[in-house]
Length: 210
Image (cartoon, rainbow, N blue to C red; front, side):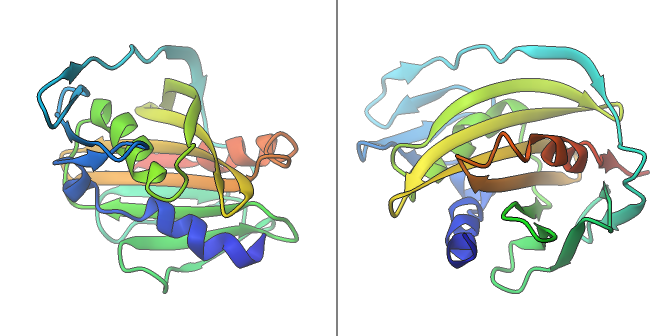
């Protein structure tokens, strides 16, 4: 798993501001993305996005998440449990802030922040089309809006195959007038269920700071 972590990260680290203008489908056709979450083929055929459900449950920070990792780009932070998570500033790509790893495990995380504001409704199309540039069979297998520590986020779980390896991404997306964040975890598809508890605890440490 470690040998593909950089490749997995590169799948996600694509400027959202650039992707908002256009993307490429798995069949190689260019599409244009709009702020309201809809998109159309470059030839003018307009496609409506399906409605994303809202989870009525309120998600909160885990009591063992005692360390606050702050973004240097805008007002968000990430509570985590330092006993089980290691983290470092990202050195492989300037668009990402932090890389994380579950100690002794094959579960990874990455935090990507930008100062550009992008409507949350647009994130689904951007994330999926960007991901297909590396994993052409990438599909969304779970999607919903959540309220996490009082703030609305978009949850996406995406599965795909890259260089013969079946991978799964389980991520939160958030945007306010100060910027946009992708809080991403990833592992192989055969491990995602066994790591689900730790994934949820990590992602639910997301907070917007004053």
